[in-house]
Image 1 (cartoon, one colour):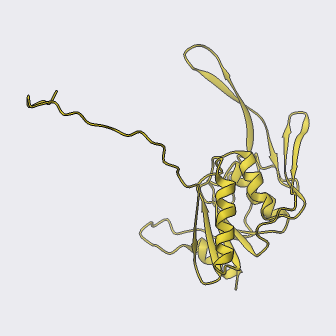
Image 2 (tube, helix red, strand yellow):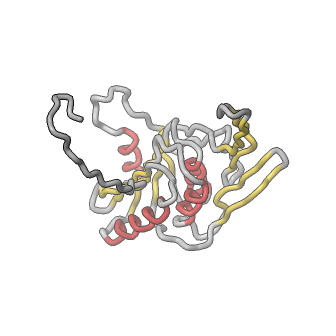
Image 3 (cartoon, helix red, strand yellow):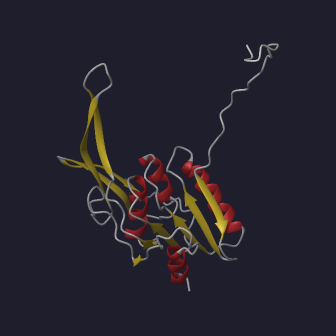
Length: 215
């Protein structure tokens, strides 16, 4: 009932689900493509595959993949995305307290074999670290930016009571193809670069450093 005592008005509301993009792309130059991943969600692999095809058709010969701040997603999605850049080799290994638990390898379904630079920072973690290490260790990409978080872990949640309280235990983690423990060590960049903390400055030093690698 309206607060002013006026007539009631019937309003129809349509409920719908809007798909949120997980990958965004651009062309930085006529030959250099740029891809920004929001998270390695369920639809990320298909979005990335479509974007790689579009960038190739637009004449992109080099690619920058921005994983700065990426910390969420599914391992299966990260593995599928990494597989697009690898013809063979190990993508990642999972371990627990009893040794190696699982291993994923490339299946030769390459979608992009041109030069790649991956941007990382201290917030790049989890599945993003698995993806980065897979390309870096297999020689499919160079990395620019800051050392990653070292948080590619596996865990289990145990509910303690009906209130919803619980405990999350770290049960293991992932290692890179070359054996780096991504659950603790993180990935050091090939080229270290930091952006100015002054957010008023629009210059992106990390993107600039990536572009220099392509010169």
